[in-house]
Length: 239
Image 1: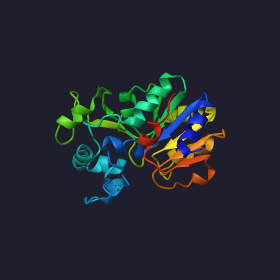
Image 2 (image 1 turned 90 degrees about the vertical axis):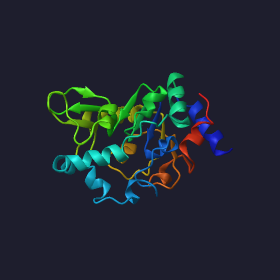
Image 3 (image 1 turned 45 degrees about the vertical axis):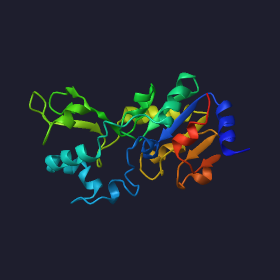
Image 4 (image 1 turned 180 degrees about the vertical axis):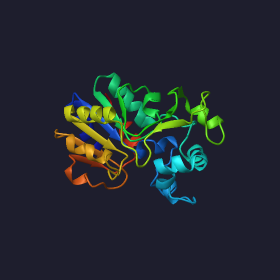
């Protein structure tokens, strides 16, 4: 039996599927992976991305932070790809119970997914640090320098920066979904970024699938491993 047929068979046997995805899910939508050859980690900036996307840098150099953020973190033209669309379809069919994502692009919701745990927040939500008023991504894109609220406060993207903790409610919801799952599909992530990568240990079932172009530390523990683009694999499945 080929791998897609195996994956389909596992899907047919499952009732509570959870999908856990990383940057590789959105690369087919034209959003570069941080660690890919054309990603942030291979570009020339005065500081490494981990520094520029840290809480300390945001506080100490807000002008440079927002210049980098607008330039490299916002992709308003990006559209959901085959992976996002298939996951929304599986949820609608009652197969998929949740999407857990490390991505901040909002493409799962744009494709129609309802139950999405965004571990690292979303570029689509931005809030005033003083009064709490929310602003869309367009506000950040169309502003220059440091974006300010009508009350005078700084508008901060609702994304988890380096040095910041993950949202506890989101993390607990993701853990619960994974614990209850009878099939876990992990895709487009190298499983090296913690604490997100540690979520795999909460899965207790025996249908663990890994879809990633390169090998991951969890390959040996998986029931099925596919080194293929995520969208290409998921597009071949039916609910």
